[in-house]
Length: 338
Picture 1 (cartoon, rainbow, N blue to C red):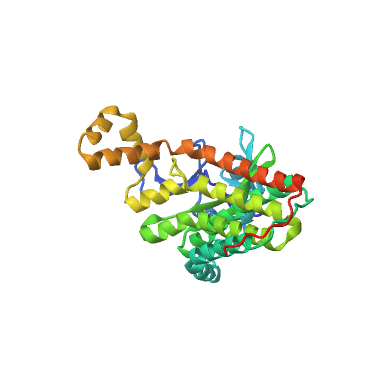
Picture 2: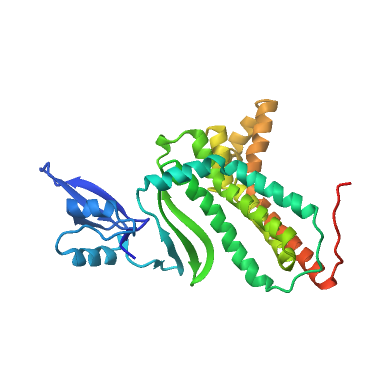
């Protein structure tokens, strides 16, 4: 892979005391700086991993120093001291008008497509027979489906990000001691260039992607008997992950969406201010009925992470359904609305 600027690295300028001459630097995650020339600065600004860097004659030595200092990476695999690592699947080109135009078209219909796909999946599932079960390797399929569901989540963010002009850097996989945990997308956004509606769509695009994947899983469950039970569990698992992402806990998509709707920087920070500070909470509670309701709402937001127990319960319920159908060999039953 060609060099790519690390997410935790930064670039900047400075002046020496008593001089107006502009100098440039690159800084790593530890805060250590190295001075670079203007050509190297320009090369690093466009270091997206898709092309060689336009560096001076001693380019190899510069790349080696930047790599050793933690400014760039030339391998798709990067690892930190805690054992966590990431693997870049696809580095994105910095600018592609054709790609951004396509993403704008897809993003415009993505919310409607996600709802229609899920609704179609539900309709096909409730009107199809329930088979006796399948003999597929359910555990491998579930692990693969989990990674696919997170990929669909990130795909939604990618489409919206390119549509709104965000700088999307890469699509990759988070690893723990080389075991894949989740899919991620790296991006840089400038909220000053987007409307609240666009920011909200970017935030919710991940959930829309999961809704599409859940709908596809339900369609497979309804139309392809050998994977019917497993696909149904996958749909339940995907919905559980979507609910997890929409819970308004700190830094989640749900919290960010709720903050945008309420036009505040962070609703969780406000909830923390009123719930942890009893004096603030009492003042709000005693300010009238509206104040009391607002405090109840803020307490819900502050304690929303307690709802995480719904996720394993939903998954366990899906597994129970799967095992029941698989081992008891339930006869085919058609669900009818009549």
